[in-house]
Image (tube, rainbow, N blue to C red):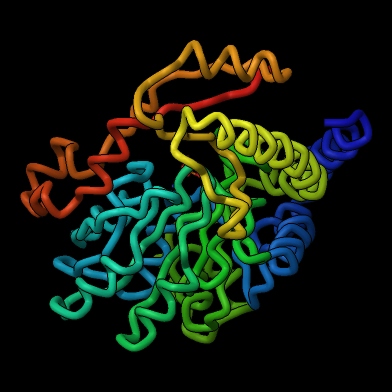
Length: 359
Ligand SMILES: Cc1ncc(COP(=O)(O)O)c(C=O)c1O
């Protein structure tokens, strides 16, 4: 972060602190989602090319808000990937909905659209599809959308890890009906906490406001006020930081993406790993993590030596992916499918390792 950005962000934080403590009307800016919150939402709307954006307190609550706005209830099935961050399914579990796990595709580690198509042919009770851009690799929301639109089933993209990623020149999650991002821990635009939901659907946007925003905020945006809404609004401090650092975080990420894509080119040429075909598939991950698969066998020192000779000082360690269907809480609910249905998931987690580059 340059001194300029650090100062502008700090200045905005101090101004807010001072003004909101001397002038109580100033506190309403944030409560009503105007000022810097609105600025941040406008930046996100432009970046994601979506009609609506709502900033919220984190991605976990954002997902709960989406299920509430879609009317998800006990017993509903939601197709999702067993490879994800556990909080991704917290909201649906709280509502008593059932995560119906689907096998992944190897190159993204995300839900496999062909498997989704198969399941939709046989099971009618599916309420939604939740894809996760795991490690910041955008899932194939374009193909998912082509498959699900015939059934009128919404796709929600958990893009918490993938802000700044691209697929076919569009931001990660672009073709989903709602995209969730996070400004939390280790994310590209880190603001301590915070998140946002992007959508083209007026219905989803209004539902989110009715379920997550203060009644005074609702009065500006919707006609049917829900005085029992959650408090899902973003912290003013997070909104200020995420807004001030928006462009800077993206340009810093671009440098990281360039470095990791170059590293992948080099590793692909060694044949020590299974080829990673991001470039061929027009995918630019956010590189939340770089996870690779060993080629024929694990040759750790050979890989690190080759990369060191080419100027890359890397750290390589086993990728310990926890599968959501193996969690004892999920097992207790007894809605796991058999492992046979997850051949790619099981295959990938065995041979995955993480590479990080020392600067
Ligand atoms: C894929 C994924 N979904 C959801 C979350 C939850 O994000 P938040 O901390 O903003 O609630 C995370 C957090 O790291 C995540 O990685």
